[in-house]
Image (cartoon, rainbow, N blue to C red; front, side):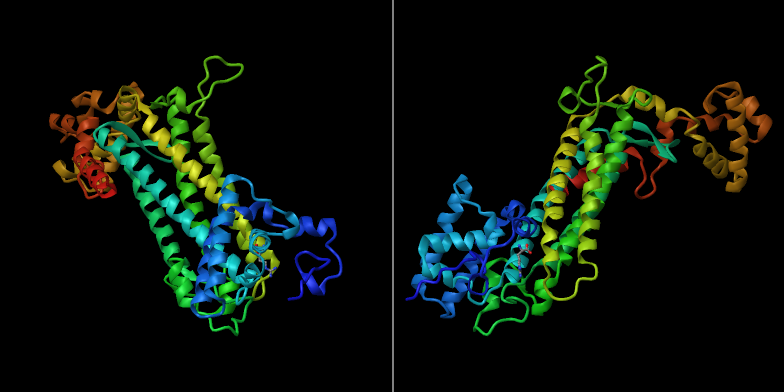
Length: 464
Ligand code: ARG
C-alpha cells in the first residue's frame, strides 16, 4: 500500500503549500469548537457503526475506530489531547488523531460523510444538550419561586403600574407571575427541541452520497426522531440555533425584569427585601454598602444573549445554499449565550432562595398612596349602584380630600365623605383595608391569598 504524505497537512494532494499564518488564524475554529468534542465523538461512533452495519467498512475496522475514539475521549477528558490549530477544527483534530493512533482504519471513518453534515449534527446535539440542561435549571428556579410564593401567599405588598403604587397584591402572587413566564419559556425551548430533533448526518457535503448508507440508523442511534429530508437544507439550516437563541433571549429578558425588581426592592427607598452576604458585595470606599451585584449581572447578561441572537441572524441573512464558512460563526454566540443563561438561572435561583422580605415594610407600603381607592369605587358601585364611571369620579374627589388633609382614605371622617356623596355609610370602612382589598380579589387568577396559596401548591406539586 502506498503511503500518501502531503505538503499541506489538511488538504493533501491538491495543495502544494501550507496556509498563510493569517489564513490559519482566521480559518481555525479549534479555539472554540473543541467544546463540541463529546458530540463529535458520539456522531463518529454512530457513523462508524452504521458504515460497518451496511458493509462499507469491515467489523474489524469499526472495532478499531470505536476503541480509538474512546481512547481519544479519555485523552481529551484528561487534558492530554494535542489540539492543533493547523488542523482547523475539532472534527479534523479528532480524525487526524484517530489516524495517528490506528492508521488506515481511521482514514476510512470519513467515508460517506463531510464536515458539513458532521458539524451540523454535532451542533444540533450540543444545542439539544444545552436545552435539556437549561430546562432542568428553569424547573429549579420555578420550584424556588413557587416555594417562596407559598410561604408568602398572604404577604401584602404594593402592586405597581407605571411603577406607581396601584393596588395591593401579595408577594406570593408577584413571585408566581415569574413562574408563569418561566413555564412559557420552557414551552418555547421544548418546541424548539422538537423541531431541532432531526438528523443531518448522511447529507454529506450537500448532495447526499453514492454509498448505501442507512440514515435512519444513525438518526436513531443519536436520539433523533428521523433524518432531515433534504440534504441541502440539512447542511445549511441553523434555525435550530436561532430558535434556541430566541427562546434564550426571551428567558433572559424575563430574568432581567426580576433582577431589576430585586435591585429596586433592595434599595433604601423600597426596603422590601434584603439579600444576605452570600449574594451581595461591599464597596471598597463606602463601608455601609451592600450591593446586589448578582442581580445586576443577571440584568446585564440579557445583553449578550440578545446580542447572540442578532449576531447569528445577521450571519445567516442572505447566505446562499448550501454550506458557507460564514456558518462557522454560529458557535461562539450559542456557546456564550448558553453559558450566560445557565449562570443567570443559577444565580437567580440562589437569590430567590436567599432573599428575606421585610414583611412589615412591605405591608405598610401596600397601604400607602391610596392603593385601596379602587376598593372604595367598587363599594360605591356594589352598595349604592353608582355607574362605575361616576364611582370613579366620586372616589377621585374623596382621594383629593384625604390628600389635602395628608391622611389615608380610611382616616377620612364619614361626615366629610358624606359631604361628597351623601349616601355613603359607615359600612364603607370595612373595605378600606389592605387585607379586605386582597381578600376580595377572588376572580380567577386574582391576588386573593387563598388563590395564591392554591396556585403555589399546584406549581409545587407539578414541579415535583
Ligand atoms: N469548522 C467548520 C464549521 O464550524 C466545519 C465545517 C467546515 N466545512 C467546510 N466545508 N469547510 O463550520
